[in-house]
Length: 357
Image (cartoon, rainbow, N blue to C red; front, top):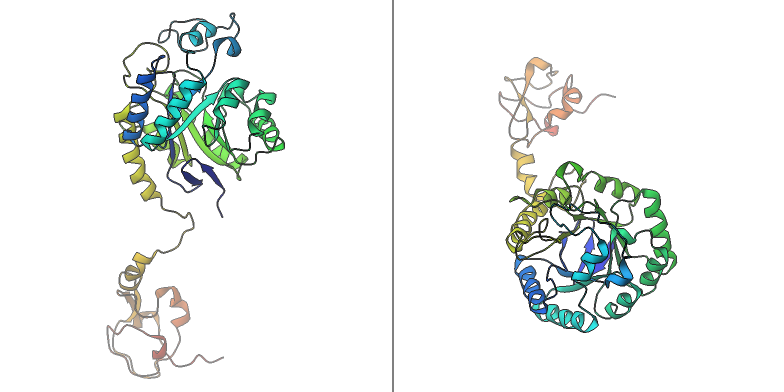
């Protein structure tokens, strides 16, 4: 059995096609109409969910909080100042966006960053997505877990010990449906820092949890980081989403757009088919004819009389595999023939006299 988690419209297992989250975040830059257009583009690109961020600068950061992003891309050097630019949406706007998602046929999500957001988002979202920066915020995690919905937790900049503490806190508060996303808390993340093998490490450390990936690398045409993440076992994929990657600042510069998203969805569909559903090595149904006709059988090298004791010189191996397999070569040697056999005869077990015990 595979661990499962219910994420909105889908049930995700460790063998699922990825659940794709287009993180619009605050790339709407305060425009409700732009937010709606981004939802529509995420749907057209093939995402399962459109996700926003619900915060107020005053409850998220002090006025003395320094930046932790690349200031060549986003020059604002205060977290408070940056967050204040884009915190004008409130409960009414998120209810409107949730309804727009419902009409568009895409799951609505928004990451809460304060207690009020937990409350007004709860009736609007199918599960809670928690940012990496709140992984150590135990009282906050407990309040989210108490809502009884699945939790998807990013693990950027954390140790396994910290992840253990977070998972325990969420579980003890009543939530056992927890997915963990590998993430590097750099904006943007250099390819050399992506460390996608950590996905495999999370799978080993948490074999009973669904594992995914939240990406901050710069997208390329092949969407390499996302496809690789799925190949390593990520079945939830989250990436920032924008309508214009050339826009300055905030999360535009490391985001994917609708075309990137569509390419990824197409690529990952093919990859998912290529991976198959099982890692147990065994012949599949379509190989039956190949096992029969492309494998070898033991074949008589020349005519032999009845009662002849077979030696290596009497035998060879040829296709098809409809006779005694060469895997039984040693068992056939020194056995006597039950009847005269002609050269090129495909040996059958009934061609051999009973072995003398």
